[in-house]
Image 1 (cartoon, helix red, strand yellow):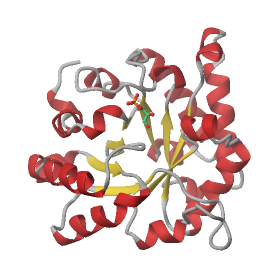
Image 2 (tube, helix red, strand yellow; image 1 turned 60 degrees about the horizontal axis):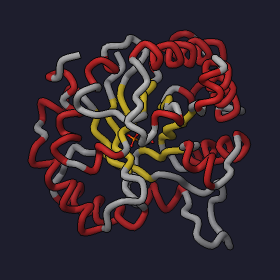
Image 3 (cartoon, protein in one colour; image 1 turned 60 degrees about the vertical axis):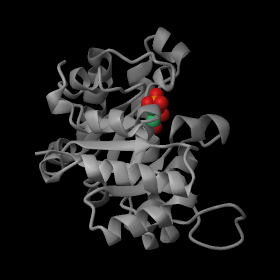
Length: 258
Ligand SMILES: O=C[C@H](O)COP(=O)(O)O
């Protein structure tokens, strides 16, 4: 049984004081019943993580958190980089890897993504491995092949034991921050192909246990339809995750109508 995961990628938004305010609002609104049904994560900028950790630890919150990226190196002369060890020390559970904005603006290819996935495992972090096609690929009907190939690249030399805990996020690039949400059926088509590929790479049991998220203009008014799909186990939410009211509604997707 896969527990749904709603992860809020704040991207480059909110300073550490605003981060505290947002997490406090989420903690106030969400209760144990919510957390029993869904795992709720926030992925703040690095500069907010210590504040979020202090709040989560101090108030024993059930919200989990993680980084938006990490270095493929573990330590050393890599100016500006943040290591997996640093994220682990801050109590991070997750780390997003291969987000399309990293692939696009920082030219991260599958080799870099794979090195980062391996770095995450070295420090017991759970990677949220992002894949997704851009508009020309979608228009040419190549979305499944493209995403499966990114999955293969990201998981190179990742063992079955490691793969059991991975989270995969399907984020069509054309749906990110555009208001253009993929239809639930479009999202399901790719997510089911990703699960089938995971079964080929590992075993059907392993694939059946891996959570696959959808991301791209997820809001409270479209989450229910997305979550109704058999191979979608949650959402990677961008813009709507920095609005406490909206994010709480998304976390309560079961109360929204499809
Ligand atoms: O990581 C989150 C995705 O990029 C989706 O962002 P969005 O919800 O603002 O479209």
